[in-house]
Image (tube, rainbow, N blue to C red; front, side, top):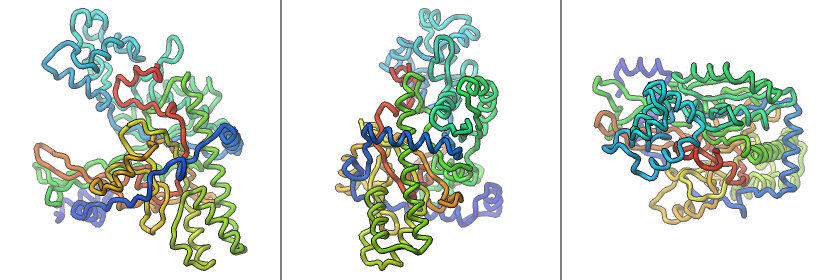
Length: 507
């Protein structure tokens, strides 16, 4: 299957022959669909937070921060923002020269509202000798778009979202998405020593640009918020790339006969996450940020989910201490089972057959795992994954975040459950990644490898199969203790297209 040259390529990438063969086997066998019990809801699986609880959990989080724990904000920020400008690239290649679609008309009608307007105007003056207004009056709409997207201007079509100007800040300043994450960290993830840690995963070609931005901007933010930022970066490892397969499930080869590798998706970042030294890690997408006027509700609910995490962890650690001592009564084991079922939404009907010794082993295994609390918003029709009760390989049912690709769409009952889901996953996580003795969990041990995804792509006109690893907040965290908390839709403001920046939340 593999030539001597192939073996050298695999070795250089850090991919074992066994791993490569396993990927080809996955193409042949496919991945099993997950067995669903129900969509998580406020009746079962999702915590609702009233105002009294909100105050309690915010206070708990504030006290936890004061203990000088290592708190980290982890932000996936690699990849160009080209999809954000899909509509405007289409305009550039269209056989007409004036805005025609509703999207194009809105873009130009409200162009002055974009925070990057001044930068774009400067680029137009430099390259075209005219302002944006003058170019529009002359009917040269495409010249404006070229200066936004292409290398001669702002190059937004090739830059990652983190380096794009998203918001205005005050009368005369603007902020890039990257900067908004700094401000957020200062507001809810700074410990008692005044330290705020952030880690961004970036593409190698963009790393120098991010580092330059840190050098330029961070001192002013440290002074303004009285915080010391510790900012680090990493790139997706070549060893997490996956082999492409031909339609007959043999290795896909390019015109030179060489193996083709593709990025393994955001699930590959579990390795980057695993290398972080922290007690608690917030995970949030690069584009889900808002200006300062909208930040209070975001900060409030970040503190709340942090407080929920601390509350659950404290209880888990007390139970584990008791189990490890061996000095427990049957009634205490029953209390732990009740906690697993009611607070962590972990249920396994087979444990009724276990004696106390076997039950203690089961409880220790289920309690001594990484823990995450995930904010969930009401589903208003957004595409993407959501919260469900699903079955793990060991027969246990527990909370999982699922994508539609993990559900058998030929199973009417499963499809009905998926459509019935009341909440949506906005990628709003806080994770506890150390055990009660302060040792870091090996997060790679809690991945369900059977939750990958296969899609069909093409290369130079030839069809191929592509393999995505278990998603970062899906199968890569499958065997974590997972708790869902309802958070307001106001905390979810992603920028999927450039015109999203015209929404009131981003103005």
